[in-house]
Image (cartoon, rainbow, N blue to C red):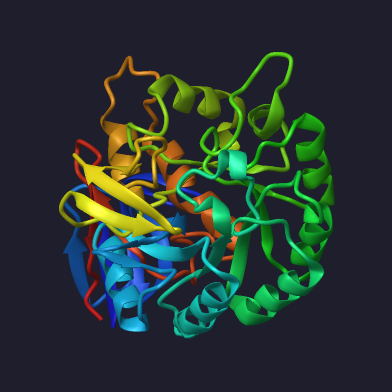
Length: 374
């Protein structure tokens, strides 16, 4: 059976079509175009712009479930929450815990990568800088050792796709080499590194910056540090949490202008995503969510977000025409889907042969997944 999805606009990894269509067969894209259509068995008319499903490189959970500690069934429920808001591929982030707990989480979640529920696993800790710990419990942070690196790489296997670490820690550069050799994306984050230390990490093979500006020194004109390197080094992809709290719109626009073709939206969604305000716990720290904003209980730091990538897309598309953070749809598609998919080695979204993960944007940019009948 072939289903033809028609829309007033279709934006894919490669195309931007007016009055476009997507032919879907067996859950995959068979053709994309405009004008004359291929043979089909049924038609679905999309009520807005069709874009690819989102790809989230960095999410800790939802519905009260934290990927670092929840069961496989609870993890599936958290993934479903994100999927219901347009996220087609999600990397489960495991925040800092004891080493045995982290190994257990990797083993528990690996089968969900094998069956396609998750796009991979991300370790955010324990190899982070105490001075830039954010919500990560300082007592659990420490430099990497070769034995511990091997333990966690083996526990994650091919499911382990991203590891965030502070490159100034003893043994960090050697760890980056080991991660890259294992096919793992080495990410710079929760770091107090200076410019030279960051550059050494990139030379060693680091290719991602974890939630730019957050968990690192601010940009300084004489000490550019992680932010300065991230904005200027073409080898780095940069994550941004566009929730209205982690970054001012001017900071978002700075990234867009300096590194726009390397920007990816991430949610950094913690367990309270999709839940009511109240007390929670993440990475060994007590967190309070008030008005949807997650803060450490002592008020000293943000502690992840409660958004999805779709919320970030809606925010940048709904911005006023003169707003510095405003994106167009093509920019939003690249930042919410295309670049993260490339980093993970996935097929370019909504190209022939790719999974038919479709999202419809309304005129304000709000996303809704589009179900295509099997």
